[in-house]
Length: 102
Image 1: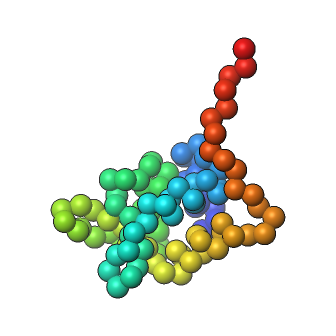
Image 2: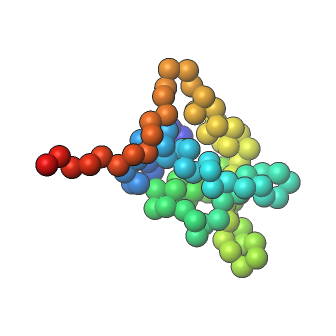
Image 3: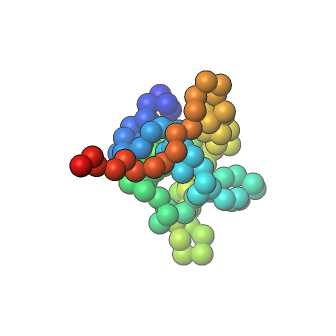
C-alpha cells in the first residue's frame, strides 16, 4: 500500500517516484526524540497528500512547533523511504526538464 501512496503522490507532482522520494527526504530534519520531521509549509501538493495519508494511517503525526505545522514521520516508514532509494538496479534519474523540439 505504501508504494502505491508514494506513486500517487509522485504523480500529483508530475515526478518519477525516486525523484519524488529524494526531494521529500531532502526536506526532512530532526524532530522530537530524533524522529524525522518536515514543515507542512515546505511541502508540494503531492508531499502534502502523502503526509495526510500517513497521518490517517498513524504513520505520521501533525504537530505545531514555533507556530508552524510539522509532520513527524514514523521511524519505520522513514527507513523504508531511505531503503527505496538504495534498491539495486534502479537508477536515480536526473531532474532535468525536457526541452521542446523545434
